[in-house]
Length: 311
Image (cartoon, rainbow, N blue to C red; front, side, top):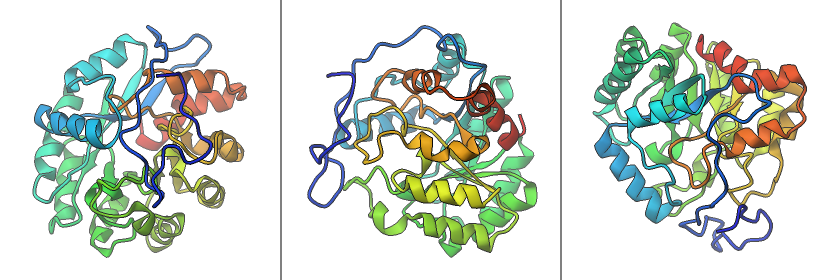
């Protein structure tokens, strides 16, 4: 497959707007280290799951997403990124059903405690009746935030069932990383992301929980302009670059990073490793070539993650 997918036209979309999946993988060249010319790099969006869950995730993406170029398990992921020059990673996971969050949190807490290059986040499911207690225990074990995924967990970001989790995170001073953007729209999800996800819903959460800090991955794809405007208005909203700046997903905005130029102190670099259909350093090369001011580049590559997660 060529080095780029086209962002123009609807060749990769169904009539209902969903992606025509699976998308193809790319054969772009990968580097052995973080590209020259970049400051220290913290990857703020890396996934760590138990092996059996990774097997299920890899199989799901093979059918419903894209081919996984790096089908690695957790310890190999940590080693791979460290050996390739990534200074630190923020480990994310999510509970796809109720009743499993505690076990997943314990798993990530154990990995993080064993590795100085890993900061782990917790998760909870909207149907967990003891969400506040689950997160309180996870924070006590060293986890430094919470990851939720509206598409996978089947809820809007302003679902009242999440209020206990939001309060627990706010009380502890921990950020929530929430996949609340509409993309990727896939018919394989139990819900329509375009129905449950919007920048307006995120704004309502920020208004309802004035002590809560949120980070929306993928630059809020595909409502880039709306999220850029909300970031300008709110000091409690952050975004990460994950899979949004590499010219892979067929999005209407080919260069969304420029929309956030006025508030680069709210943008984090993230990769989505290992759930990638292209080279691990693809978006790092984009950042290297983006002609950002030195301070902005240092902020996006590492300093913003240090601030948000207390590294």
